[in-house]
Length: 229
Image (cartoon, rainbow, N blue to C red):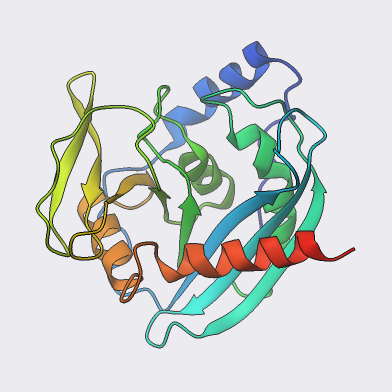
């Protein structure tokens, strides 16, 4: 599938923040996004060891699922090294080069991308899901295991209960309960999808476990790739 090269890869924090500032106006968060996607891709990156520093070994995986059956349609995984040091708020620059390579290995163009990370629930309102959405032009959302920014009230205990994630007086995501009595995940819009639609898709993709099947399958694929010699 096609992924656009819209910028050079930065070498410094200032350069990375400048890329985020330049691309942020390209976000489309107005429309509802795909209501009945047929295929959805999960993206995840695993690291060898503690994963710290530039040059850490990693594996980036993309798994495309049939939404109706949650069966795997296609997989793509690449191994490499982190392209940028670990800096909060700039995590996308560590993972995007490898994720873009994995996406380019697909013959299928998914209707929706689900990232293990954040969209607008980000200090600069431009997390990994936003960045990937702009580069691919595809509807994209983020699902985080913990909250990166903002505050929220605990959602109700039942599956589907949620509460707004608020940062600086702005709703940037939702704490969403995907399993009764299990701690929530944190959903945020990335590109070409609104928050309500993003939460509905995450629930549909998580029929049995806390994390959506997109994340679970991509995580397994990336870990398996790292385990190979």
